[in-house]
Length: 106
Length: 106
Image (cartoon, rainbow over all chains, first blue to last red):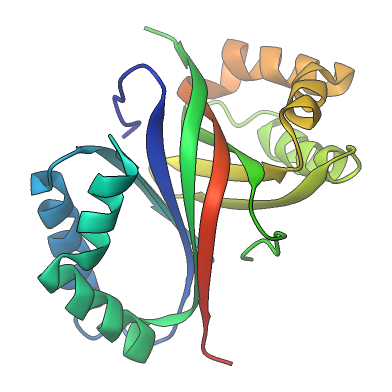
């Protein structure tokens, strides 16, 4: 669902990826990483969608929170397995969210 | 595919949406908007994925380029039809991309 983030400024990590055909362990690890991220200090929310391309955007209070998440031990192992097996290519973009606006039918 | 963006800094618009069940005209308009965006000054690239959630990230040279795109006449009409028909809810986040890194198997 659409992440309920606070008023800007805050930070976003846009992770765009193309998968290989190797599914082994990917789904479990991806789910586990979301669960782990939620427990990280400074985590604000996450949004994810995949068809040919996968886009996962996670939201964070600060660049320090993003750095700590990148270096989290279990996440490091998952990143390594991602490069070895699961991803054909990816790009990670670290952003400062400066402004946002929303529409909701309800 | 993964957008080939220049060295940061540049800007990103993260558009996250939940669709209604009304498909009428949506696909054509979405494709037309991508085509129009590509012709806008300062456009750098776009990435899109949808399953339950849709995430489209467009990349731009400047905040002025984003503002001009938001106000482009045909895009304005599409935004209005989106609120009337196609979207249950959406959130738009305007970001400055400060850093990026990539992995490519090739």
